[in-house]
Length: 185
Image (tube, rainbow, N blue to C red; front, side, top):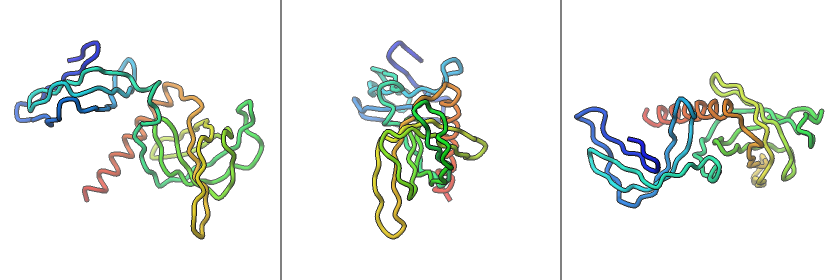
């Protein structure tokens, strides 16, 4: 059941049981709706038993809580292009980078190349069947240590269209499925 500020879940099959959660536990969930696409909601457990689970006080987190999206580690490479202020390519050669993790809120990559905070960049990457270009700005820089000195750049997306966001959801779900399959071996 879906109400104005609650979701209520019941088992699909008679032999299925729902997880029992403590009253007042905060939860966050990804939901998909054919009309609105993927959304992230938060709420609080207001009822929990083997045959019913009710989450009340729902809030949509897309606008207010993007940074807390689930980050998925990757083992992939991409290319970074430095952008001008008008968001066009600067003419500098692309730099090959290691994509550390990715989420709906941003991406982290590492490279020995030095960038500045707030630099506008374009990241091109390919994961599975998804080829995506992400316009971002650098929000955080952490200097690595050791012999293979790298810098770790935390980036926030400049903007994602609804199509790009849905492609990101599908890509992230695929990464999660692959990680679970590896862990279950």
